[in-house]
Image (cartoon, rainbow, N blue to C red; front, side):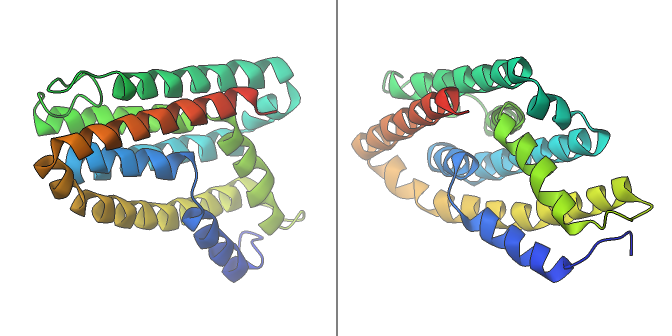
Length: 211
């Protein structure tokens, strides 16, 4: 159907890739620990909205631009790296008792969730490696003779995003359960904020230096 082959292998590969820790995983954990379940779920959904955008871009052929143009790849990469460093700096240098980090303590929970959602989209969309991943990984499971390559691409993308969303929500719920400890222990909360901020800065630096 649609020229898709080895679908079971694709699903298994997608699950394993979702379980592998990476930039998105660290972002979801950080938001869940600092903002609770609502922000964790919002960040997970934001990440996967970013994946939907990447899937549509790849299906439309726009990701080929990133693969073929070093200038375009570098521009998107540096924007993504700068954004991660910005988020990390706010967490790392936030004063205790303020909302300068994730903006979740002083702001209403709903506003904090929307912030996490929007930041999740940006951190994913501004990572050109994700775009190239969709462009390189999904076509391996589509027959070259398929008369509906675009639909096959979208179907595989939807499958990958579905399995990824399930794992991200589990991850957010698990990390959010630990938040109570940090709420009761402000010093530990400050430590996790600084650790998360440092991790974001490290990821941004790593992304900036990637090729």
